Length: 154
Image (cartoon, rainbow, N blue to C red):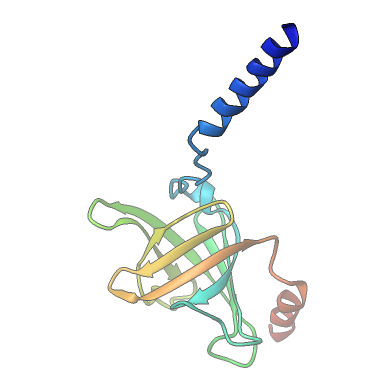
């Protein structure tokens, strides 16, 4: 009798566990703050497509709201741009990032709405051009060969 009671108990626990709703494993996006943006990001997709081979953009954002951008999209040589960025909340569209380059090189071409900010990725959409969508992924650092190539140009 004791064995049957134990078997029924195990069976009822198994049935109860099988009937539970599945656990929601989606992770809500992070709040857009300098702290959550801090780090090195690589542009992985532009308008839904990966970048062409040997083309790259690395964006290093820090909590003090400065940035370094290593890229070769407009040149066969690696370029380094530096400056400051700002964040603002717009209740109509969400969190916006904008930037100003150092050395009087002007502002970024667009202000970008940041969406889907997670620990490992984020999406930027140009505020004035919804077809300009950039997906960034977090990386450990800018590759040393790129940093060295920029230094050799100075």
